[in-house]
Image (tube, rainbow, N blue to C red):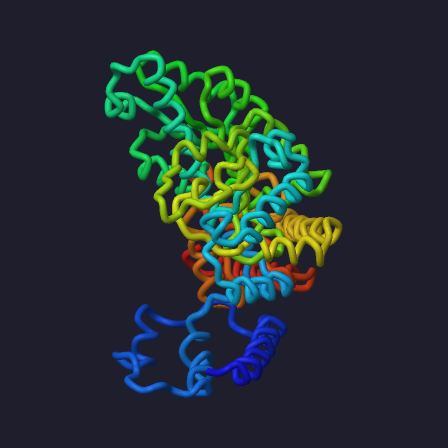
Length: 480
């Protein structure tokens, strides 16, 4: 493909993408295929000779689209949102074209410097404490990770490195392996599975703190387990608090947990993967109160801030804690300015070496939506969730099972878990809308998350009418 054909095909692809997104609600939201469907549609081996671009494009609808779950459909209400906007898509095209691997400032100065500035912009939108901003002289700063899972792991490994250095400085005779065997990290029993996985990768124990009736960790419950562990000779070193849990969008009480972590010198990491975007709205910013106690904070603009995947933003109060855990400096990665104190080499802030030019899409989106446009997007989704909540509450066959704070509604039919499992099966088998479940206090619960940028009130109304109709059919079956 030469430049002339690329121009032509590129315009065609933009049209295809625009048509796909414009007409996405006419597509069945959840695919009706069986495992292994794709293998039967394409040859066993790659072609020996080049094929035409037309042949490739023709196969998008034949091979790919039948197996796509349409996350950007206004009838997709599963998981949490994955962000999408035209400015972000255009920025990603440019990022792909530039194609730099931004592991150091010298590898592409714009890639590094724009990221530092964009994380400061976003930190100011969130009204983060000054310590988390890089500015020109700050000790903290932000970095784009691939996912919140990576941020949780990076924070845990940095915390592990920090506690090891502290203990070995006090007592150089101690064995590192012995210290690690006694380290213990903590999270909510509602925390995402990636938090437990971080401890697994980090080779440390992870304990889950039981939550209250609002599915939140309270200081008292944490303090009790902390004291028990210290008495048993364990070394507490890390707490991952969640703001906006995956099952129910619950908020750990960081104003209670934070002072305990600070007093005990535990690293406090805050995972706000979904909810973090909402903190740019003044009415939701109090949910972040207590962030001043944290060592690190992370959320995913790629969930709810119109910046498409992957873009997970992480801030640290003291970047030397992160860099100290990961720094490796072979000769082939050194450059003239790395000791100047004026540049950041982001390879020291993350697990992989390479990194894409992801700050471009933040820059495009922030400029083309503005803070007000981003706030309107968040508020619209919250109001749509409240609308769905009202429908549920007005039907005495159903119950709301967790506070509706942002864009997630947890609900169920009054009755057994089996009844609700049957309802979810009917909903997803119909493939008109898509939902996923969770378990709260031993109960099987349905989650309704407002996800798509294009979801409107009519989609919520249609979804409720569909759920209500299927519930009626289910309840009239003889077995129920």
